[in-house]
Image (tube, rainbow over all chains, first blue to last red; front, top):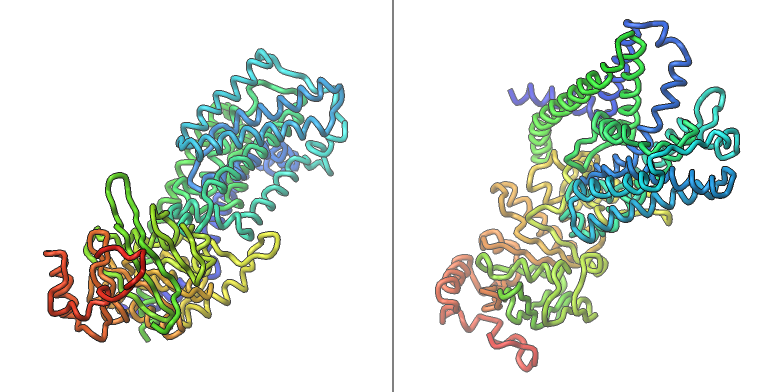
Length: 348
Length: 272
């Protein structure tokens, strides 16, 4: 009996060793591909049309970009709900600066990012220095910054169409062989965040803070500094996403970002990062964001009303969570077998 | 006492509000020595080592590490001074690999902070081998290990950083018999490599086989100190029970008690 387990265990260990650490990525990719296949069966012309992908690439970054830095925050076992308002705040600062200067100056973008940095730092300080739970603190700042945006704009939108074609526009939302520049920005940022998370000391600290906060403190990691840095980074990235969104629409809308809040959180969760902290991947979030956009496209092109989108989103989120829960249970069972095998091999 | 001191703590007082956890404790560790810090629950054992590792700041007293005097330490400084803490509530990130855990908080990086992964894996493997864990894959997530091996991973940190002193705070609590044996083996191996340890436990049968010297704490004071060579485990048990009941060492053991002579003439010595 033990022998049988050992044989199974050895095979399992050998196969999974090569893939271990990439399990979630493999599953999320499989979900993505099966969705693609389903939509292919339903509506082949839409799925084989290159413009479908251009259109996904032009909207997906608004969900994906804030979701990337949000992934780091969720890995550290915190949450940020205020980023949707920070997106609007950053974009508003940029739009107002351009209106004041009369040109699409990079200075406007810089000031917008700084506004995001400030808002992120405020979140970090509220959470770390005043000890307010992040869920509550960021709901507060979510209302605060949305309120600021609404009061300043009095609810009116700011048209920015006259700046189309300026260098800043081209760099941020131009088209390169049809590919939206902001999609390339999303890929670039995903690579940067992947490197930080997996190859840099800061990324290691993020994992440790989420996995065992007291332990992290005991080995001398400055937990507050890690968290405040995370919120600051998230603020900047949210502002960037807001600016990019505004430029793509060529209009600043005071409600900017509202729909992305839950979508970005959903992208992180569908991507396999549990809210319990300590684990999670950037790749998963990226594909998670694509999946959500893909569903939207698939539902619309399959000829039903747009009301179905939310329903299908909900179903996919629940399926993803259920699959992760199941995976964790399998993992636990496997851990027990592996523990036994290690035990035996060390006894020899 | 011809060996050098690694750590000396003088007249340490620690209060938590109105509760006095430590009432003027003198404590020292010499080179290549295993000190068994024993005492009942609430005697102040954990508090004392948490001060030594810099998790708490003492209200009074001073800490001398390798000849340098400190009012208080912090975990980072303690690490730099070569002190490693192995805690009963494990200081491990169980979702992460063994090598990451060995280097947790003290990663080897280049100047820009990027991790030197292959180097860390190599060193982690070597350190685990020194403890006798030769078959362990450093890529295995720690959650796949049993309690004794988890303590092994923590203890191997001491070898990685070339630490001089390992504080083992109840490392054998909640471990099975076999696993306890394993942890005791690791402690012996540390001693073989010239390290010192403080081994905290309220189970003297865990401490006795590995310790060279016992320091007995009771209600925030050091009441007795013995060399292992002077006592059998049964003697130690008798002393411990007597201290728990009456607060004092039985008469027949008093002449072995180092605390009657230790620190004579030192102004910082408290009345014990």
